[in-house]
Structure formats: structure tokens, C-alpha cells
Length: 125
Length: 241
Image (cartoon, rainbow over all chains, first blue to last red; front, side, top):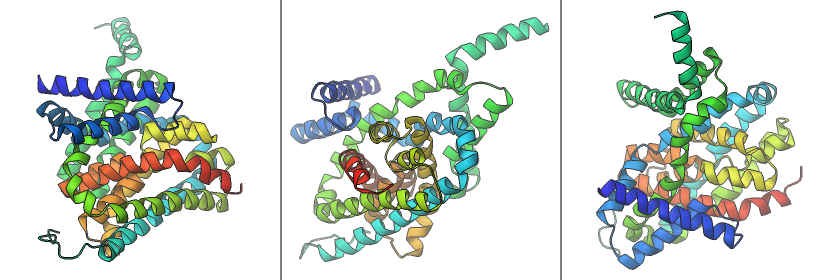
């Protein structure tokens, strides 16, 4: 039962998110608003119910599976890709790795700069 | 069994969602086994292998993508609730995240800007067409969000969805080694880098490396989706085409 209750709760939050986004004409996607609302609810509730814990663990443990159907959609663009495969490939690889390196460097460096003083047991990494 | 009987079964299967759904799960299960057999080498990325298997299957059986997606859409649909579910790791890591909130937000902003600007400029230099450039711009954002951004700025949503997955695979396969080579070894920094650039596929990879890295990747992916949805239309309007 926990899984069923959990997935139902997640769907309800997504539904609220989708409805609000359309109703208020927001430019953020419904699931992102749903996540924000669930996060606020957890802050108020102050703990994670077992049902949500179970459902989210199940969904997130194989998150990458969920991207497969869209990935297979590459098949629709074989024509476009055969003409533009070089710019697309170079852009995907270069832009992704450049961003990745800069984000990693800035995060690691900024954490050193902004490190709060006298912090107990922070050296866990 | 006669040939007409076989044909009848095939006609049933090719019009029912059962086949597309089963094939998707089976391809992932097999690809995941292969990945574990390769000692979890990032080069044996299960998503990439499963996609390659399914594309080959569709080409060999001459099945239209639409028919396949009729079944696979049940898996695709779960991206929505999975996005909502990110609130849970986010809440659980709240204390750790609060302590590094400012560095995280700044790095996120750098990531969103650099990601969009490099995608459009590199693509332009190498001669990509305008719809392709606009489809590439949200490549680091998780699929459902990326598709709605692409639509908003004039890209092709379904091309974006495919590019998003490819970006995720590139990041998940090469990201951790690149970060290590640059001496970025803090789990929180690695998580943010993976989540912002490679969304859910990068987050899956991060969870394999450590729970903390996964939580930071999941959080960054969610924040990046939000930041991109708000900023990307504006960034794109400032870039020359």
C-alpha cells in the first residue's frame, strides 16, 4: 500500500501543478511547480511519510529508464541529423563538457570562499 | 503454426501498446545487466545501449516510432511524477544544501548562461540551422521542461527531447572522469555539475557514485529546470542569429 499511496500523492501534486500553471499562465512546467509545492508541504510537515519515501525511491532509482522513449525519438530525425550531425555532435559534447567543468570549478571554489567559520564536522567528504 | 496465424499475432502485437512497453523495459533490463557485467563502466551507459537496441529493432521491423511510442508513453509519462518526487531527496538534504546555498545558486546561474551561450555559438560556428540551434539551447534541461521551453522559443520539441537524452548520456559517460581530471572531487560540486548539465541521466549516474552526489544532482536538475524555464527565452532573445 505505501507505494500506491505515494504514487497517488505524487500524481496529485503534479495535477495541482499542471492546473495552476495553466490557470495562472505561468511559464514554468507543471511538474516543476508540483515539486516545489511538495517541497513546501514537506517543510511544513517536517518529515517524509513512508508512502512518499517508497514511491520516490522506486521512481528515482531507475530515473534514466524514463528517458529511453524520448531518446528512441532520434529515429525521427535521421534525415535532419544526417545533414547536421557534425554541428549537433560537436555542440552537444563541447557545450556539455565546458559547462560541466565551469560549474564544477565554480561550485568547488565558491564553497571554499563562502565557507562559514567554525563549522563542526564538515569534513565529511 | 501457419503463416497467416503468425501474421495475425504480429498484427495484434504491432497495434497494441504491449509490445512497445515490454520492449522498452526489456531493453533497459538487458542493457543494465550488460552495464553491471562491464563492472559498471560509464562507457557501457545503459540508456545509450537500450536506445541503440530499440532503434535497431524499429528499423529492422520497419515499425513507425508512433506505434512504438503508443506503448513506451507509459514509461515516458512517469517523468512527470519523477520530477515531483525530487522534492523528497531535496528535503532530506536540506541542511547540507542550506550551508552551500549561495555557491550553489551562483554556479547554477553560470551553468545556465554558459550552457545556452556555448550551445548556440558553437552550433552556429559549425553551421547548424536556426531551428536546430533553438532545439539545442535547452539540451541540458530535463525532457518535459526542455520540450516546453523549445516550443516557447521556436525550436522543435521532439528533436529537443532526443537531444536532451543525448546530452544526458554525454555528461553521464564523460562527466565524472572530466571532473576528476580537473581535480573537482567534492561530491557536492560533482553533483551540481552533473545535475545542471545532464539532468536525470546525470542524476542517475550521480546516485551510483554516492547518495550525497545524487541528492545534489537531483536538486540542481530541478533548480536548473526552473532557472532555464525563466531565463532561457530571455537569453535567447539577446543572442544574435
